[in-house]
Image (spheres, one colour):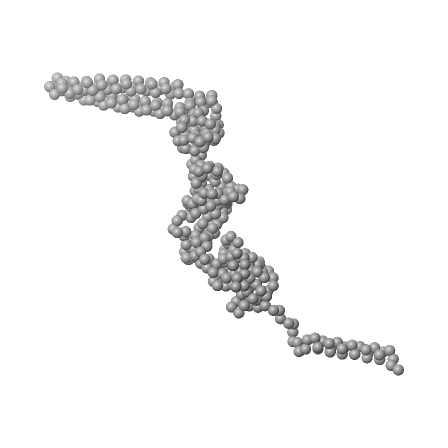
Length: 388
């Protein structure tokens, strides 16, 4: 009889034999794991197309013209002749300063003119008489010269009196404080009965011209240098030779209906921020834009005529944080490309390196494939459906 140890060894050997036989029948002659069949993926063929280079910049609105109304003469305010917050026109009277003493000064100056003119008339008659007497040697040449000098002095006195009268007239006119520009006027800093003085620091009121209106935005100097380099290298071109166009995004996220244009850029870089101020001008017929509003400006700076746009859903990141795309090669194998992106245009990335015209980028089925794998690509049309 077999002892227990002999029986255990025999049973173990028999089990191993059966196991090896079963494995041999399941995968005869196999050398590795079976390969996965090619997966269906959706691709987009990247073709060059004109792309407007639009930069979004933060900014604030400012009035087209600002006029601080100050008195040119001193006195008591008798009347305020406008409604605060209303629209005024250039030349409209805003305040009336007490004109009494200026009227008296003007009347006195006019009287001085009349007095000087009368004296000049007398000197002229004397001159005419002495001119006849000097020819007949009745008077000396010195008497004639004295009369001639007296006439010139009288004429000078007339001119000076007229100048004083004109100054008095101007001061009298200045008692009527006029609006220097057309626009919307703010609150008044004085009321009737207030004493105002010439050259005071606090304005009586401020008038803002809001149509059109400025939008001042800032752009980094590094970005401006990069754009200039792209223009010099021919990568960007101007927009039909026109001034750079601009659009506004308001504080509530809505788009301002009137487009504007870029007017100028500052000549110096702000040393604190490293940015340059750009000024755009926008129509403001409804006066919906008010000075000091925060806005975002979309500035069209040029056109990349051979731009390559890759859908954002086809771009992922590797472990280094670099943007990558999976491209289907001619033999339908997948290749990973590291990209260099410029900016987002709608729902796409503007790619400067890593993609060539005609490349097929996988946008659907990314999770089902990997670099080196075989795929069955189907073109995705603009409406998101697979084509033939």
